Length: 526
Image 1: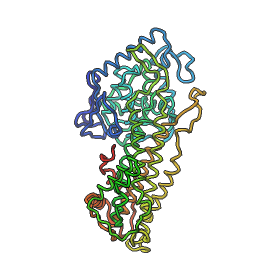
Image 2: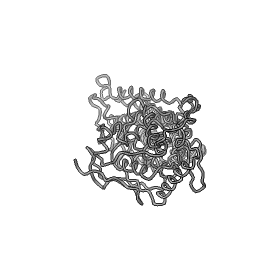
Image 3: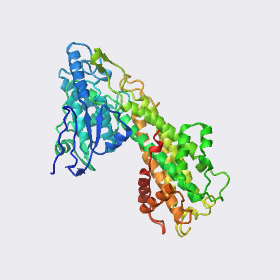
Image 4: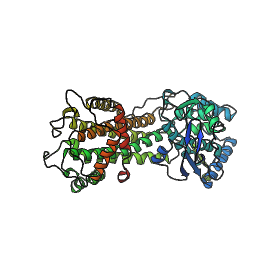
């Protein structure tokens, strides 16, 4: 075995992976550095798909230590503290085990009941980062060693195997976080890259000691909305890229068809007054700079082109709003109770209730689906010779002898229908559980994971449109005159060959989606 990752320390600053090294089968060449205190963003969550180094300042470390000392003091005084001097959930009226470590361990045990497919490692690692940020704020009463264990894991490629189903997002993401904590303790399984290993083996290969629990550590680790906010944050980041992709594809479509640019007028959109529409139109105008309309299109284009600033602008506005809510959640404290040593307070409440992010995630699912509707209709516009300036039917080089993008369009339609079926809001699907202790629940976890999945499906639909635009130009569609359109077409042509003769196009769609992932989003970030 090659060199292991050094275990991180929370003495002064906490860190992790070296500039280069090896863990199992995965080689790491660089790490992003994240510093606490500091604002955690969806971009940081995406970076956590790879090893990241988290640095925690000395003042924050003091706050963590002071909070833990205060919790010990309060518990020793005989004051009732949920989860420390009581049972959990509906069993709050019962006495806990005499040994706090056993009580904490028992919590992880009874919650590790998840079902379904394993969540993507990138989502699980983002969840661990979000949990680190909450615990580092010194309101949960864990010792520095618990925060260090999370930091150490993030500095490696490890990702606990966490089943998809188990959380109702009401008392935190209890079950998913319990599976993650169990893996950090050396139980269950972990991903090391694409390899699935027993957690104990993965930890040993990474040079990490198994996590040990004491006091209320188990409750603090599982009693937060970290999976919900992480998955929603990743969905929000993808949504911004999807808006950029939708606008870039729309601009290229306008050039290929020779459409006029009046629909992007700044005066037009400012008259409507919506900031998202104004910014979307500005992005379109920039991409169309240097393009020349043919003058042979109808006075008014179909809505799938003419109304792009209004549609994509509304998506942009909603994505910004949702991302703001999620970012607030990522930088808050989700746990119960919270401890305020300076004020001598222990406050019991509901900071584990994911309703704000549940609403935000449902909104993301809705707007991502409308972007898919747009891309599918734009694809159909190119496939129809009656509306595409006479491009060959189905974008086939020899219609009848060949079938062009017929299969791509049918698959895109199927994906859009799947997205429509999945867009039913989760945030109000409340059902009582836990003997009516959790008598109303927000289902934020399901809302967030649905939004994450919607973003993944949208990539395939937009990738399908990108393949169609590349094929349209090959078959005689107008070459783009803008620098932005020419560059996008060239990059698509590098990854996707013309379809002549027919061939399987599943890989081409994913390659095209990868090109779209690289489009600039900074002008839309807000």
